[in-house]
Image (cartoon, rainbow, N blue to C red; front, top):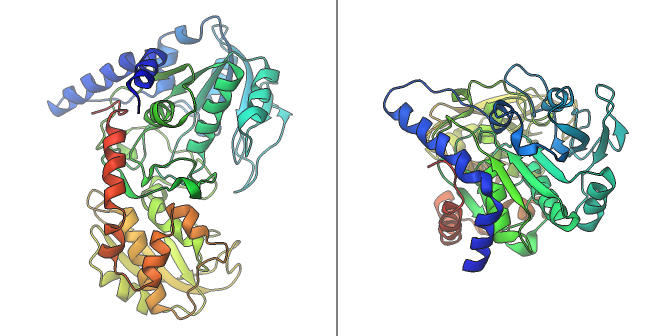
Length: 417
């Protein structure tokens, strides 16, 4: 990265320093035993009387997770406040109010609650999305969506696409930060190779990125956009990188239909890899991504998985009947993950270990014909090494050099230390 680009980044993220300092101060107080209360980016924006948005025509990219502590939606709150000129809403995958399943959106409509025009961003990018921003009349795009911490969770690429298109449209961009629900302790897993870029991974970041959305926005602006957008962030106060979601005191609103709990997010960056196989990843059950299985699997898989001695997790033989998706209406066998030590738990290594043991335990194992596993993992490495008989340590060893480089790059953009 050229120094001139980083200098430009520093001038276009004016709110970052102000947002990071309270978070650092809150962390210091917590280490000395004082009580902490996390405040989201929106809470801090509102407490400041929306001064950052004064005189601006605002549009908000959000979904049902954009809520206050008392579960009012931020769009409803800002629409009722004369200090904010909110004129548009932009909905991602699943929609602004969250009525669509995976791979769907709500389309262009007027929001019944506020009367605001809602524009669909799903699978739109570049000039097409820039034209939508221009047509909406906004001069500032605000982003506030809860992430799940995994590269293939599409909201972070909605963030990337919206930043890119805001730059093309000449609008400024504001990110209101929220916690990474699985903590921000470390980046884990393989790094995407650019030739495998899709909407489940646009740019080379690790499978579990360990960043908040504001930190990702800084990374995107400094490393990956063709030119920086006019970016401002409103960070949290009272959040530490070691915090899991339950430390936040915030309500959990499912960011998508198959992310019902923070525990789902904890395993998701590993077990979502089963989308790249013919096994069920638990969609259509009450424990998606915690239940995995297929027709013909018995207790041998759970025994093999437990035999790996993976840190922080145990596996239970389980039987379930998905109500939709793979094996709909059929009782199948498999495993349920039980994380007993989330600080020791490595979701990506666990996902790899489960793929290896599933392939060895069940003769029916197959990758999806479209090699979706390569898009999820970001290269052919995982698939080809597993097919060659590699064990968990060998597969994980294959990505360590690229992961170390990403960790070095990532460090520069972290707000909470």
